[in-house]
Picture 1 (cartoon, rainbow, N blue to C red):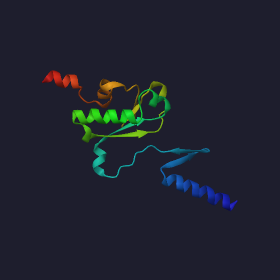
Picture 2: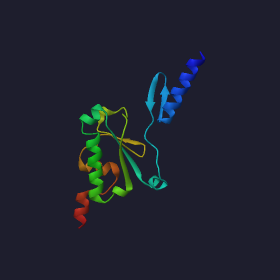
Picture 3: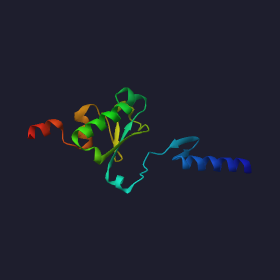
Length: 129
């Protein structure tokens, strides 16, 4: 019995150190919410779902790179952090992103990215010039 308790405690400790926790018999990875610098707190965090259905709909690393390119083109790359995340449970409505904890469905194309991130559209910027 003591060996079992020690084994369970060791697995919980290693899961906690790896940023995961145990729910029932499943090991669940916690969302990536750690920041290494206080300067990053001022940046908005964009997490892109990369699981099967979202990836099939255009999400995953492809959408991460697309969002980063849009931000670079518009000059907003210093205000956002773009990274992948675990499934949000709504892949049927994907591709999905999470912006500062808020889930946004169906992010496809430049206009959808601009609207989701709240940045001015390229067409509006061209119209002003």
